[in-house]
Length: 412
Image (cartoon, rainbow, N blue to C red; front, side, top):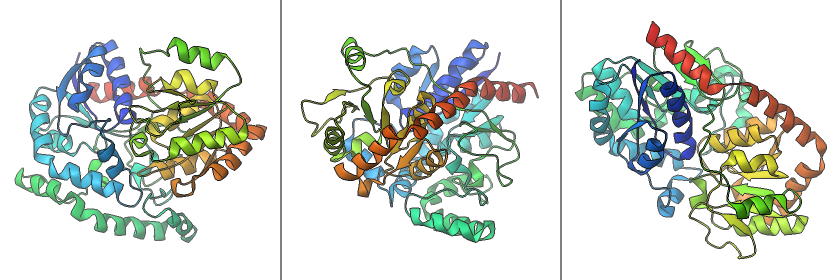
């Protein structure tokens, strides 16, 4: 048995992979603690994992905050600057737990946890949730702030390395407080926390499906691609929702996850108009943000994606990696409407698989959504590709592969 500390920060899409991993590690006899925002305490303890609160505390009901960070052009910068402003608090909150751990697993933006691991010298495993985090020159990501840069791929890896270097230089001011604390702690300041500095030297867990990305030569050599670690929720669907799903044709399902939904704007109203133009039923997963949704729409605050997505005619979502993973496992065609962060890149990757179309939020209206949704539900090639991809995703066992890799580090 080992004492393992997992860290996570963000939405449910950020939390659930580590809950899944924690449950598996606990099943193997390890003592597992999950360090994350205070608002997730009950959810973590439901799975019989130990919990410690680490600042910042994230509220998924805070529409103003979610809108602020779900900006395509500056959202990522705003998130990183905010985390930098609280780096001392998050470091202190994590430090005591790190000193008691035999091994720690970090989330891509738990900067304070990385500092604590390096300061204490505890064995450390890092993780990424999406291919975007590798910033590969051979498989370059699509940045939300400038999705047109995808055209530069034609210039090859040399140009992409130059672009990555420019991005590192441009974002250095975002992480200055992190580097200042590193210096005070006597740690090396030569690595960038968003780039090479996020990766642990012993093991990097790529917690996504091999369908999303092939291994690239400029990924850290210690990377293990595990597959998605799906969290199997205890909560089922309500009798009302079960009746709706079983009482008619498969509906269009609209979900903006637990973060982009706070910046929905007119998304729900426009989506309902598109569904009506198609003559199809619609189901909305709204969280606590159902503002502006007409009363005749079927809407629920929350339902497990794993229960709903396989029963959809098509899925419309924002491209967050957690929602994308569930949509891929659900085996239904999808329309990705990216808002910010890695969502543009995730959308492009599922489109490349032939299971999705992408429609930028700035172009999302009833007519454009109707056009692409009609293509998705009427062209059988999308459904066939989605079913084939779902088979590959389901055949992977991300939780087991990640836990096996962690056990190997502990044994070494």
